[in-house]
Length: 358
Image (cartoon, rainbow, N blue to C red; front, side):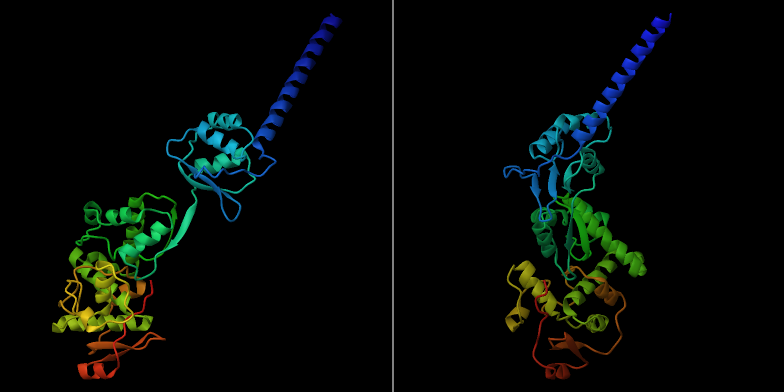
């Protein structure tokens, strides 16, 4: 009996030893295959979906519908992970799916760390700034140059009647309703979402700063946005914006043409696609266009730029005065001379236009 007990103990010890060995082997394999390779990654030039940026991080694009096996193969070929089979094993033990998009991988990193990034959806974001006074075309160009979305696609999405109706915008485009701000977008972002983000930002900011705008009809709000867009392209000094708005409202009240240089510039650059003028001549102010407020009385058909907070505030809270004219008299400081009569206006000096700021 004693020998039989010893045999049982011996077998148990052998089994425990084997189990411990296998556990240690599995743990060692897990640590080994999960750890990053000893050599730096090798990014092939023919793989446009993977590259090393200036900081040394790898920019990786996961294609829509791409399989776990395909991703693992690419990561192994580039020397980012040790073994694609271990990559697939991780996927079988985790219910989270890889999410298509563009990611930044700071290396070296373990397979578990890399997978956590690719299932999180935390994509590489591009910081892009839309300046105050930017037009719809300029906004589309900025986004296209940042590889966020195509220029023509953005313009088409900004003219979608369903989108315009959703925001109760009476005009043919979102000109003036895309808030100038700094945005963080993924590369190759769906154009509809980019448009929605910027339009939502406009109405959110408007509700915060001008809550009375919520009670206006679409036509009334559109007139305020048109005025703000003109003021945005006219003023240079913040303190003059509301006074300028007051001058324009005075002109509308007495039936006088707005005579905004900014609207003529809009015709030249956005409708005729010509370079921005350094100054305006009589031939410019005589261009036949519904946006030329020298030729056509009243407000133009739509906004001419994306107004920021200062211009929007000016359109909603103009400064009351008897002024009907203003003229740029200090280009360096951007200051204007405001006057009540045409004679006084003429004496103020030569005609200046707002220099190219975009």
